[in-house]
Image 1: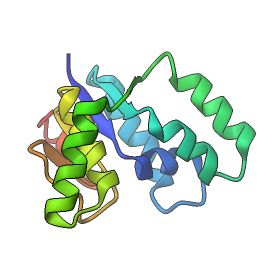
Image 2: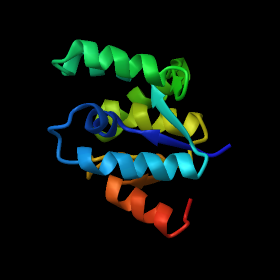
Image 3: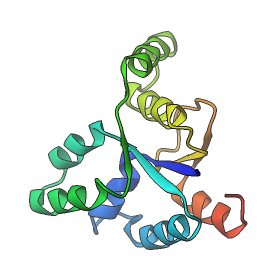
Image 4: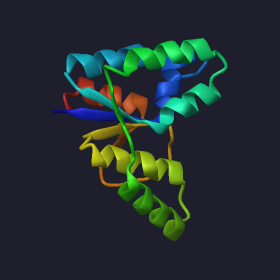
Length: 140
């Protein structure tokens, strides 16, 4: 089973039509669906999305839609412990490390993010444009 992890900034692009990458989301999702790839996110994103977005009803409807279609994964104590250790040792963003290790734990082949300096935990990291290009070049 092929899986791709979406960072929270990509999920926010889906929900918020005012975000700069919002117009690219339909093409990315089309490529994911046509290639029979499962989407994975971390469960902590649910409350973060609700907290960040002003339109709470929109977020709740979105979460209701994805909960049975996407894999919503907990971190687990091992991922959390390892992420804290890496963050402390390297002075890195804990949230990015958690997301990447969650993607790795779920055997994702790639992670899509808008963060240009995302932590590298050993899986391929793509921007939204790079991911779309990878699909077009049959890399996935």
